Image (cartoon, rainbow, N blue to C red; front, top):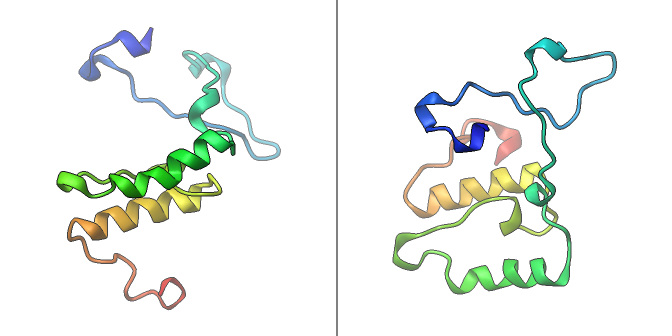
Length: 103
């Protein structure tokens, strides 16, 4: 399968979680499908504990973690925010300074 291939041999892939109304994917272009249940962590006691525990190691030895599981709510905008916070922590400038709505 694709997971066992070397990175340089892997095909370019588009992963779609849902299609808009009236849209479809040509089945001839689909190479495979899968169900990644852990892609969106469950809002459970264990995951909340992991999120809260992250503050104990975040930034140690210059390592920062960002992802949907590092923020409460588990949504795409929080994942983006998580990445921006980590990027800022290692010295990156905020990329939207000229955007009034993003301040």
